[in-house]
Image (cartoon, rainbow over the protein chains, first blue to last red):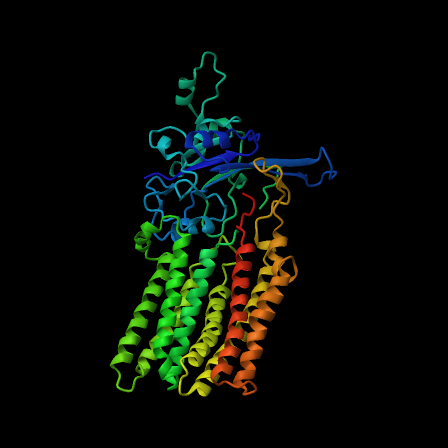
Length: 219
Length: 304
């Protein structure tokens, strides 16, 4: 049993949308739909600043299925098509889905949508086809700023992993994807108070966001 | 959220079916409306059937509908169970009515009819309670459906009583109008309170003040207040006050109030005409309020 999740270091995220695009490419997400979107939050005036540029701060916020501990989508699903997988992720069995879309209504984050072609609901699977083989979710593997880390919450968020830095001389793509760095060894220092979650309406989202002093988490 | 007409029709016909059977139960308890029993049962069954067909239109894979019993505690499954119980109660009432020497179904059958008829709209409303959709996630929603059931049922039963020309049309008609009056007043009060509650929900949504979605560069930020404030005094105030409150509740309340006070004759074609006008108004209000609840339904994190 695992309890997989992703953490994004928002102080590192540059809003390049690589996660958004990589997700669409590998999962065949239809035009106009997204399994992960990257929003820009801000700019807002910094506290105690002049109120104008350059005393402003902002961050980019990748929003996807939050693979919640108490998922409302699973509770409302009449067919158990939406379910909590053994690895702790929330998955959809498309064979069972009747397309009632109550899960999409019950999701506080609006990250589920109806696939018009298959007439079933879809959303981020945390790339279960990849993580089942020990690979990283594509949004983590392709993160342009090495801001996203994936791992098992039971082993501690500090042990979440991302691909190793690609600037090693002679490092090839295959080698790079097999070499990992841990969150604790790679990103700037943080405390537990720097780890944030999206709005919790009782669903206890598991996806985490790291935002340190100097930038204000907004919700 | 976009209007989900199949669901709007489903909840409407559920309330109509429940209302008709509810009124028949009340009339039977009072020893009224013997001649209209079969017509009431058929009307309720037809309404339930139309509601069921409507909800089929919502399902993208209706051929898999029997999967719908897979998760017994989900709101939809519970709703489905109450629909089945309602249908069984209709059949039971019919059988007991046919067996009865008096021609009336026994009193306990009437009590069953009342219980399942009120339980159905409450279960329907309960299935829509979701923490993510703040404007739906309130006991006011099932309370509205219950009140709406009484309103629609009172007027529909009055029409049935007039059409089948029940022997005690005056008393039965007055009883129906009394229920319709209560339903109209309670529906109106609940929807006004509901609108006020929604108006006060603005601060409950995630607010990051200023944001930008690069995948929708030409779409503005979601203004939560324009949704939460729309019904009471914003862009949807006209359909709310005119369509729901005045046409949907006040007019039926006045008509049914005058009828039950004896100011309008509750006999034969007069009862029919009065009840038809009031029911049309109530239907308009019922659809307007349901549609408004969809228009203002946005997620707790409203900017994905």
